[in-house]
Length: 482
Image (cartoon, rainbow, N blue to C red; front, side):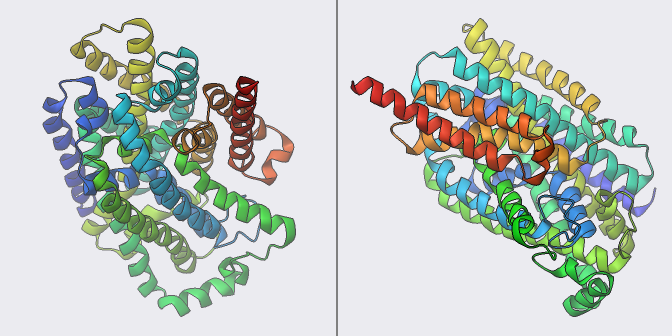
């Protein structure tokens, strides 16, 4: 067995062990879904960041930066790497300030274990419509999102060990489904804590070591400039509406952070609201380092390998690690790409499971179900969703594109709804329901019309959802005042 496989095997052994050790901690549904609301700030922050940045960052964003540089002079991608990174960091900051503290307090006060249940209880004691619409959006979007993570696992293992893509998908899916099914949110949170450190190491160490190999910053810029100086330009040689669309698309990615249910789970599970400021600082520092490292890694690879070296740019990260690092270290850091996929897929599996188990079965069909039955059903649903995602992982779209589609649907449906529910006293049930439907529908339509390729769908989706929510809510208030 070579050193790469040994490093990789040690990582997997740790993850399996965590799943087994945390299985005994799940005695109730709140334990399985939210770790009993007793996570400390470090675990909560690393878990939130690791689950927020998936194979999309380790393979997708790094591959995008390699293929298109900072600003994408080709104009093929609507979300250039530089503006996506800046938008992502700002979105993370906004989510921690606008959502984290209030959601932790209000979800505990209402006794809500899931985002759909929180929105239901925020406006009415029993409202199946708002709960079931939210559940449908989550189930649809996250199945595609989980498929993207399994696809990322397939690419990483294919490039590293020469496995077939399907073998890599099945291996990654099996590991994730196992420890999520056994350990629930305790396993998810603690494996995310470990995976968050591995991801951070991969995103900081690999580009810095690579930078030394290409002659430092000046050497990197010179090598890339010899290929095309627009690769190291913030505008990418774009101008006018094309540049504006790229900037808006990149920043639009950041809008999605306030509407992601798998991140909201971390806010709801943190030990107390007093822990939020500490967790927030940790999360923001992690975000700055990781987004900056992802873009730098792509640029370093462009300088090191040259343009067009990879037919699929999303396979760049493992090859860069194998080329410039000792084999044992490469094995550990390549685990970062699998860690990124796992830390997101496990959370999304759990959110989808909670939506089906708590929001559909428990609240709509069997309110008297005992805790053992609910935990068992949660494990069965986790397995079924995992199998569906394995099938969808074979779709031809890139990891980056699959994630942006699901990210847009969730961000448009839940971002405006949650921010207004937490901060605006005039928000109403009908306004929230209208906003979710309009936002999600806009994403579906925008991604399937010819003009939709000019601007990332989350920008219009979020805007229309926000307007629909506000207008319907205000109309209800005017009517009630008459």
